[in-house]
Image 1 (spheres, rainbow, N blue to C red):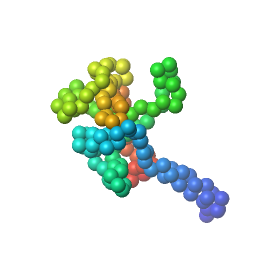
Image 2: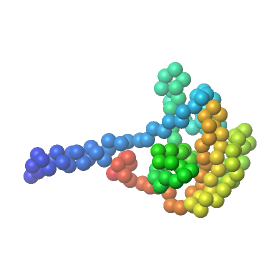
Image 3: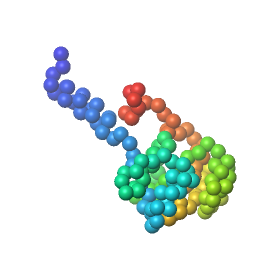
Image 4: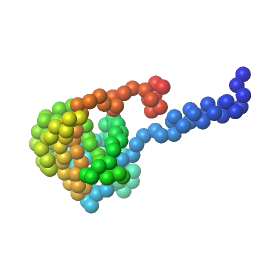
Length: 146
């Protein structure tokens, strides 16, 4: 039989595993309407309207990398990288839709990277990883099968 202290511990552990159920990414934009149109119309990301045209986009599977800081990337800086399987083909496709790239594709060792303009919202990066990725992992507290 389980005593109440053990039951509370197990319950807290189970609850802790499920407290975080998603990540919400925010891009601050000087022209939010243009930026929203880019994600909706160019990238074709599905969305919900949270009210008054405030669109919240569904993102592809994701992962989080934590890197040490350096001169170009001070602690506290964050960057959004959209991932793809074939960066050259993705660049061609996006350019055909009028997307402006701000750098050529570079091989950073860990993957191929470029940057593109989000109308009204600065830049984000496009990334073809050359390492194992966590975005394809099954299981974990967010999986319906765990």
